[in-house]
Length: 172
Image (cartoon, rainbow, N blue to C red):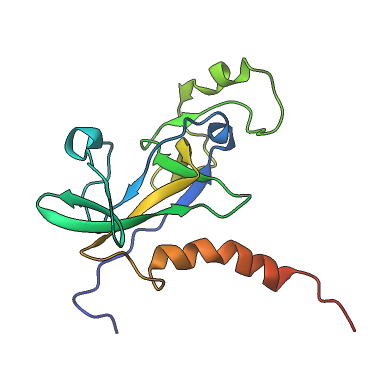
């Protein structure tokens, strides 16, 4: 039996636009210890201009009068981080989905907006694409540097753990 306080989960099928992974501009990222209940682009650079200082225990900055402590975190070797954006409902970019081949003129063709194909369900299917890339980011904690049990650290160790789990086992 479901509890009264449980929210109905909206399910979607997410499709990645591989072409958007090409030539993404690198950005500086900050992972802040807060939640913003809005899911749309915002002029963050107007509101968050950190005057980062190197303190005795790592990076220090103030945000809205609160002290934050942080450190630079590298994306694991061989991987790249991407900032992903969801396309608006009803829009689908058309063109080749071939990420590794194609001419430089392909991108212009891929930017044409049309109605989604009939095989896709408008309220179920979503499309995402990369808007920027990063190889490192600053991880901030409130008053202290986030510890080794921070969820983002677990996520960053997963690729090497997955590779070890799926590696061939050598017999003695």
